[in-house]
Image (cartoon, rainbow, N blue to C red; front, top):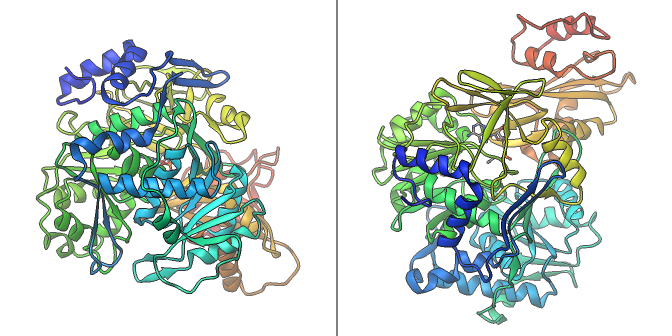
Length: 635
Ligand code: PRX
């Protein structure tokens, strides 16, 4: 029996039991057998969730890029590591072999060093899905710089907040990006952001669109001439297992985004392990995850997990609807993709279109299908299973989070029988618990509660950058001695888990995590707005959409509500990005509040979802009459 590669259900149970009985022994065996360490650890695990402090493989030395690139060179140097599929189907795909990747990462790493980047420095990467994004990520890791990728759909304000929060002095970007038929002025967004970031001294720019851009003397440089001059080899910086590898921001229910800090050794072991098992990856496979590297899914399952296994990983620049709704399936056929991993929102959008967009392509290469980021509804699951997988490909509904670093609950294809809408069983080493509202664990099956994890796993985020207290408060205070996920879940009669959704004020829209507070802050900046509250409501394609309840100031200005709504959405776009725009805006005379002044979002959520039959007891509200009025005028 191999700990590393599970092949049938009985083996899963055996491995799982072993992993829970002796987690240290289990992960030590995986780490020893499958990775390159420059020095072994002093201890496998030290942890204390009350501080919280978590250390995996402490004392070990390694560089993750040696594991993701160098060690493959002698055995699969000419194998494609990254298969880049451009936005425009007429532009040829690019096959970057492991040898070429090595050279490109080394050159980029040397450029960063020449620019004065040192181990521990933070580098913000704001690039579209082009090879330089993956290369820049790996180049940072090569020299021990901490990368912080910001999704290139975020606005300049959001970018500036993240740059300042992590104290980056360098930004890597491109002249522009392609998204379907649109060209986006990324450099312009960076220029705007940097007006608020005085610490940034250097910007390296990749040429992609050839758009006219402004290059600021003494700050901005084209990266290509620097790469051409750079030396093609760069010895890896030897890192401690617990040195930070990257910071990735995620929304919280309140306040600023949280810079989740992931460290090196444990993250590598866990993402590689789960990639191998959840996708049943085999040497000749062509694996494609459609996420953006700006999200955790791209970090763990486009870059690090696949490359640590010597895989071929597809990087797609485009969108599912360009030039038409058959684009995903055209790419699957063209590259004979074997594992395909996407978000339910994309599946729902494509399922609405004519089936010919799917059936005209040969999808017989597919072996495993995956979903991530939000609950998948039964209808979308069946469409995916029937039309994309031809009922032959197991669907892995993978549940995890930015904070968890890797997949925690998922079927293992060809081992775990799947069940629509269920993420099914925990990965080896993962010990879920369902908790009731009083903080007691709910044992047994056919129960539901708040999902916690009782024991650390190697890729759990170690802290929030610059704010350990917030890390403790957010994840380790709700339930003593446990990591609280913020999700609700149920456990069925055989012990399968189904994630039911967030139980806090985070709303998942098209698979993107959005906190209500930052959106409300953006809205409240409008001079006509007195107060606002955002809730989610069910949406056919996005899963959830945003409903804004807004109280206007009594100044008598802004009579035109339609323009006002547009201005509000414009403000949100500027502060956060277009993904956070409101689908519905209702101007209200007041918001239902408790006597302590807290907005009763539960009631607003019900009204937005048109589920007003059971609003619960509203008599304890400070202003019960307002509920009637909101209901009467609801959209
Ligand atoms: O609510 C869960 C939902 O996405 C949240 C994490 O979002 P983020 O940190 O952006 O990471 C997304 C990619 C890993 C979770 O708390 N979520 C993620 N996967 C699933 C899911 N909800 C239901 N089913 C899933 N498979």
